[in-house]
Length: 200
Image (cartoon, rainbow, N blue to C red; front, side, top):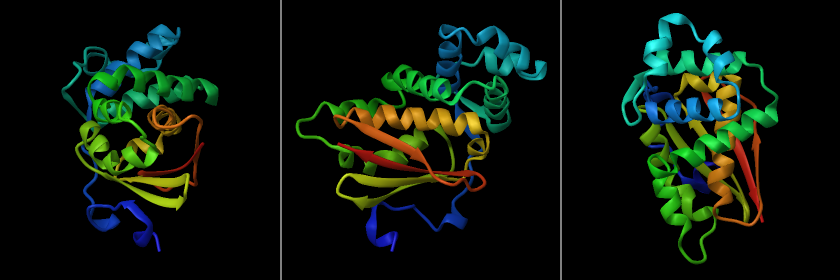
């Protein structure tokens, strides 16, 4: 049934999608900037294993980071044990910072006349692949103003902080295309995430 309702289908069967082995440093750099601006940076550094200080703290936007480096960053963010609303807000702020690069496709599409979330959903896999070198995204129509996206093949989704922050990023994207947006996290599967969108 899902395949019949696919706005964006997976490029292959779920079990044939290659997992991510690297993550775009742009997201990590934006994340560090946001942590600093919200007063969490110093404590974050104490939670990041020393072996990763150079790789993470000196990361250059636009380059690729090995997945273990990205994992170390988001695990340290998770160890901050911030309240959910703060993690969502950080994700939204990181998305705002990334608009000029990774999310430029969404920003350009949002400037059109009469656009809705259905305008950007077909681009979700493209957006995902600009940030990760493996995994994939699909979007399924649930109703006139309701959809579900599934992202698979990325171990970072096993980190609660990353899943919450990514939900904040998605909220920011969809909010550009409607008056009011809602994004809900659905039950988690290993190396994957599912979110439900509703809007008005």
